[in-house]
Amino acid sequence: MKKTIRAGIIATACFLIHTAHAQKQFIVKANEVKATIQPTMWGIFFEDINFGADGGLYAELVKNRSFEFNMPMMGWKLVNDKEADASTLIINRQQANTVNPRFIRVSRNNTAGTVQLINEGFKGMGIKQNEQYNFSGNTLAEGTIHPTGNNWQLYKTNCIAAATEAKAVLSVAIEGKGSIDMDMISLFPEHTWKNRPGGLRADLVQLLADLHPGFLRFPGGCIVEGRDLATRYQWKKTIGDVNKRKLIINRWNTEFAHRPAPDYYQSFGLGFYEYFQLAEDLGASPLPILNCGMACQFNTAEVADMEQIDPYVQDALDLVEFANGDLTTKWGALRASLGHPAPFNLKMMGIGNEQWGPQFIERYRLFAKAIKSKYPTIQLINSVGPDPDGDKFTYLNDTLRKLQADVLDEHYYRSPSWFFSNAKRYDQYPRNGSKIFAGEYAAQSVVAVSPLNRNNWLCALSEAAFMTGLERNADVVSMASYAPLLAHTEGWQWTPDLIWFDNLHAYPTPNYYVQKLYGNNKGTQTVPITLNNEAVAGQDSLYASAAIDQTSHELIIKIVNAAGKAQQGNILLEGINKLDTKAQLTLLQNNNTEAVNSFDGIVNIAPQQQEMAIKDKTASLLLAPYSFAVIRIKIL
Ligand code: AHR
Image (tube, rainbow, N blue to C red; front, side, top):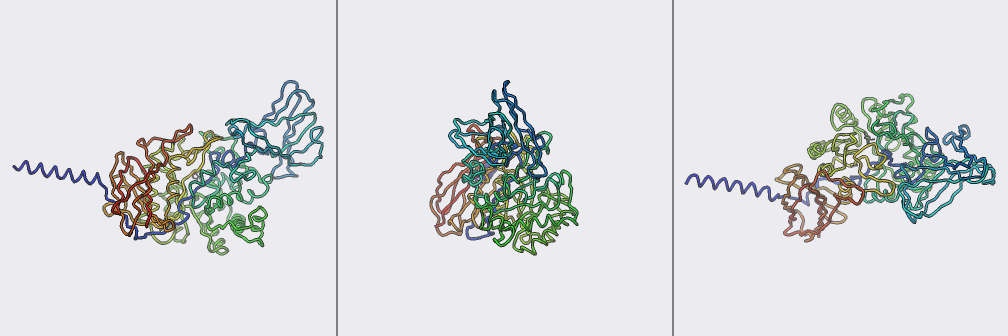
């Protein structure tokens, strides 16, 4: 008899445990607003790394168009057949043109045979059938070819491509006897983003636009700092006539011995004017990052003498005027002359990229004083170093908070397990004082800087889980951006990256789709979602956040199931009088956490949409294994 009773108790206990696993009761309190979500919340971080600008977003197809690479013929070769007698000469007119001193002279001593100057492009040139390509070059016509004068002139022509080719080259055929001097030899597709001449690659910008980013951070990243101060990013050298933008070596050219990129330079064809224009096109707040008188501390760690730091501070002040100044100001007038009389509405700016140590604080104080006294409403973003913990972080975090810094820029290139376990990171942060910008983050499938890191589903899922914590703490976290953004499949230095592209195509990673679901389902205020009266931040591998969108009158719920089994969820929707009986469910899911997307039409992870029913103010759904679900419900 006793035995039978004991068995019954055990059976009952098992049943209860089973029930608890089978049916998670989430509670959303839609009328308890916890925080306002900043319009800037989910943004993008652009850096010219992985051939992100030249050879990537900037649609120029000719590599080394101005012969200013250290090896002036890099990317070029003269090809002539046996009968032709031809040669090239690189001429330097340094005194006449300090920013673009070199040009090429091609001489032909006879008219027999063919002579071609060939450019290989950036890993070839992507050419699409039936699209128009615009060729141009500054040419000094001489001899029998163009006897129109001895001055530099811009010549243009165009052609329609007969076929699609990922690895095309440009051939400039030179006919007749004599010599011709050429510079700025350029080939662009007619179809660029908004069809701007000399513009950006339309397919890549479209992918950025689809994220609906709240801000656009630019130009980086370590590229802001330079390996030394001489190669730091200087915005004033990136605006105006492209012929007058002095090319420099890209710091990622030699950064990693395992990923050499000897042909990686910065032409600045995508410069600061194009940047502001792009931010405006995307509806994103501009977030420029300025050098603060410090070169990369992983490289030379060179700092500008404090006695000589004024030009650096002046650059920051002038950038505000360039973006916002009216037409009576020097820099505002220049912006207008470039084609944008209206201000770009700059509201924030980063001082230094990933700096650390007392020398950063010394310089930050100077910048903050100068900028705040002239432009008190500009919000300043400051680095708290390369890691989210440790001595460098603690020193900067404590010091900058005491100095009442506006926004602290935290970086985390960590494992997926770090991201999962840090979903609560900001729950305990001070609610007042400095805000947080999760300025660079990406889960690393191996370890930061490993060339074996992959954009796999586990990494993306862990980021989705972590981001529920950012959203739940929107009163503390005002901005976040994945990094890096772009990578050429044949030219990358750093992996993982949000978008991979080649000369013709691009594919979004699972991480991209996570960012996209957040950017497109932002909401305006966070509201609590709980499981067993606690924030949903890892119990049974579940993570969740909830928001209302006061503009579209919707409730938006995000749930990550990081377990390898399905879990039944009942979400009780409290604090709302009336809800639609149908909701929109968007799902990212894959049973294989190693799964990746790639070219060749392989899209293992992409959003799938379906309708779901809402009954008795309850959303019931089976949370698939390894899934990220976004639910939107109309508030009636
Ligand atoms: O995103 C790649 C690099 O990582 C950035 O340039 C730098 O800020 C960080 O160390």
